[in-house]
Image 1 (cartoon, rainbow, N blue to C red):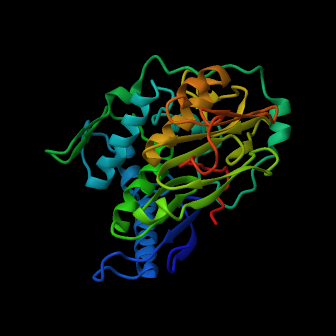
Image 2 (image 1 turned 180 degrees about the horizontal axis):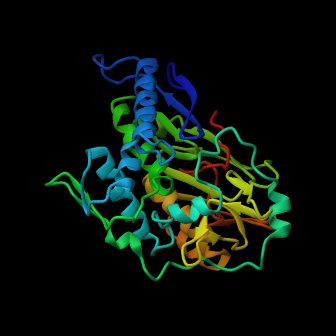
Length: 331
């Protein structure tokens, strides 16, 4: 490892967060500990302002507002823009307007601190596997961000959920505070952004964890970019009817998607894109998932437990630049 590196872990956004910061490359910059603390403060503020679980958040105020045109801060506009971009990029599979459907399934409040249901039992009880489909009404297309007027435009009643793209956006935005440092990682609950010129020569080692067994799938060395994993195992619960539910919904039905995949790791140039690709791949099912991961590569974990690499078979660990586990472990 090159020089001293500060390692800060904390809870935020209902997830485990971790920030690693190397030495500053310019004398005027704060030390690694101060830089990591600045990232922590940014992420806490991001959560407080954009969580749908906080009644006093800007996002909740937007969702309650009865106007078509609503004044919005730059942060809220960025979040709405990221949500629309993720929906467009995924062809409507990553739909940020499914708040009502999530609430009906019992996900109206944060599940932070609640133990998830047993994933093996959920898979055994799952209905026949079927790829998710976009909602034909495409409510997300009615969202418009206007920076000139500082507003978000959408029909009243169309509510936004920042969860689909929020952690990836947060990781990407947080790294702006780390420009000028030798190397860094911002891990927002499994959505990572890695960078810094020193990471090319001294890469981070990150484990890829199996979402069903929690065993190590492989260890790769990370130099730069965005990486994300989406899986059915993290937010999994029983509904009042006794059925298993998770937060990855089929937009066409509003019900949990059981596609034959338990988890997907996606690689991209940003955490937002990686998060979007991971969700789109999982929602699409095994066959279409390979197409989503073809450009940048990734890993599929079938609900049978089978692990499949996409676009990584010919690469040695020394040549692979991105990786993400279900639970991030950085060395």
